[in-house]
Image (cartoon, rainbow, N blue to C red; front, side, top):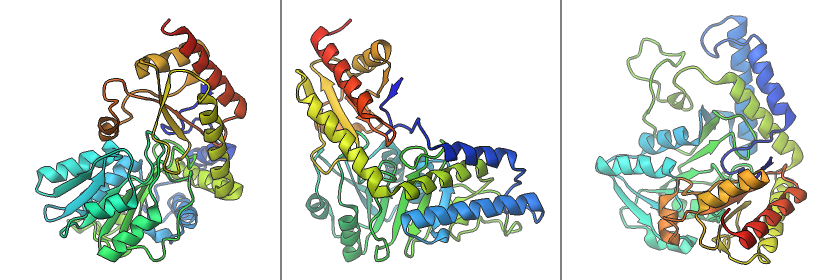
Length: 377
């Protein structure tokens, strides 16, 4: 199989990721923070080491990193924990449902929500969309459909100037682009997932807190501390970490991030850019291909359609006839499709990994040429 669906999840992981997960499952590790015996202490040490590794990668301290099961959980904790009926939040048509649906729930509870329309956005568009009473910018800086990007550091500077809370979905960004220097950022919450371009296991991710952000706990329960208090701890990261940690998964995530740092984020970014450029250049020689987005310093994602064919048919044909795995449909980004006029057709999304080869990209281009020449089968 040729796997070109990295934006959904990474299929090929560095070998040290599996080794770390195996060690987490077989290393006689207990429940971190739930006991003073050796296995519990050893598990706590592993989680602490992983927290430090994530902190080094993102350029923050270890105690600014909270672990979660995925970016969706982290975004729910950020949005529902930091915003309320008295707020006014701005988001965009790029937003994934992991961001939109929590915002819609808060809107129903009295929060004001502004949505910046359009598939091509700029920092000027965001600035012009702010209202005098806007309190938060909730943004996806890299579209999961087209790979288009927004300048994350410029958005942070804008929020700092306006005194706004920034909540960013880094599910597609993390591991694809390096993090800007966050030392001077405003009050910020950054949600990330582990299983995409951080090359960690599924079921891992987290939330990063910068500055003075008050969070109400969204999930409450066992915390290992303050057991006689009726309320869940409100200190970070404990406010986000109710229940037992996924120790083996967190160890695998730390190994993935360690591999990224050892390989070099810029080297990874450059290879991903080369993959995308080579693929797009090859598409220009295939009749009937329509490309969407990709003009705004894109990440390693290409959204396309083939003539008038339904995106699901194209994906099925690529899989059945050529053994190529890509994703069609709406990609949980309904407002992007409304902006692009692709609600009924969807789009076919190709997304590339560091481990994707030039030969695999050429075979995918050849498959598209055959489909364009032959039509439905």
